[in-house]
Every structure is written in structure tokens, then in C-alpha cells.
Length: 76
Image (tube, rainbow, N blue to C red; front, side, top):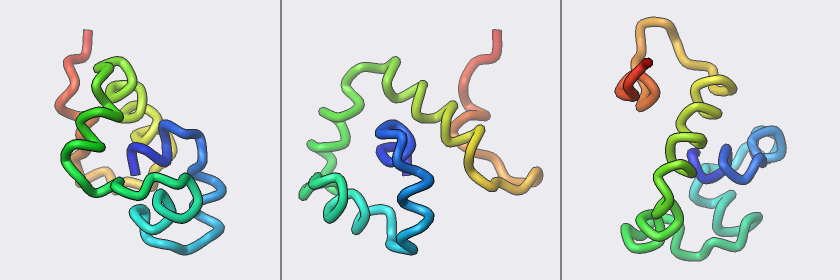
């Protein structure tokens, strides 16, 4: 999901009703989206990862009782 948000494709993804990994493979052409090496390389810039986490928090429909990665970020 973080990759989809980082690529600004969340609205398009929602319309497809695919699993996030399938959407990334078929629509974004990231064949190895589930591999550790790919994810580590994709988010090698920490600012990209933090930005994707923040966007996910803004756009995703998360229940108030649930926590996300956003809740682990330091709030200054």
C-alpha cells in the first residue's frame, strides 16, 4: 500500500479492486514488489518512506482504535 500511495495511484488502485501486490505488479510494472530487496531499494531514501506513511495515514480508512506506522513516527 505504501508504494501505491507513494506513486499517487491510490484512487486508481481503489477502482480496480485488486490486491495491492497484484496492482503493483500489473499496473505499476513492479514484478518483485513483495521481495525484501525490492522494498529496501524502493524506500532506500528515508524521506520517501516517511512521506508514503504520512500519505497513507491521510487517505486510508483507518479506524480510530487501530494504529498504523504513522503512530510510530516522532511528532515534533
